[in-house]
Amino acid sequence: MKVKEYVPLDHDARIGLWNFICQHDSMVERVELALSIYDPFPYFLAEPQVKTEITPYFMGRIVNAEEALKTFPFILTEANIFLHINDEYAPWNAGTYQINQREVIVYPPKEGSSCVQPPRRGLFLDVNALTAMLFGYKRPLDLYNLEQIKGDYAEVVELEKKIPPFKPFFYDFF
Image 1 (cartoon, rainbow, N blue to C red):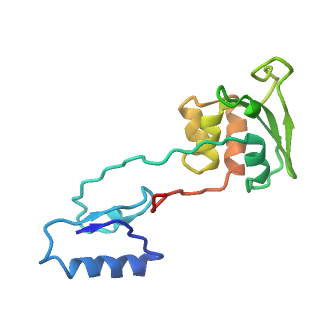
Image 2: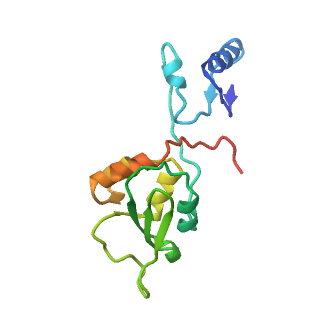
Image 3: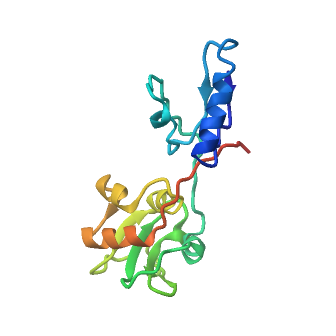
């Protein structure tokens, strides 16, 4: 049995769906579920002897960093954060972006330069790290530990507070 969309809304639904599948155990040799990596299903099983595969399928890309940052639902904190973004394929994304309590302020790179001049403070990242962070795929501290965000650790911790905890997953293909 192959279940392409297993989406319980709560734990009772998880139990009900699994019981439904179990009622058909005499008709199937194997059950395959397509789940989000965040789904707690393997922890739900009493004896989780399951094979787990993680298969990345979708890729995201921010093509307008200014608009993405200005419309992103940041959590308001007291601190201002400067993000210095580099994008080798879409130079209009390159620049410094200040995220403060009310808005995002954009400081484009100097004329004739494809990147921002190093300021005294702020976090340095490329558009790939920005995409992973804003889409909820990776947290700022994870990206810092992977050396995809460079800068002061305390500023990364502050950025971590500003990013809501999303858990993305596409169940359907388009």
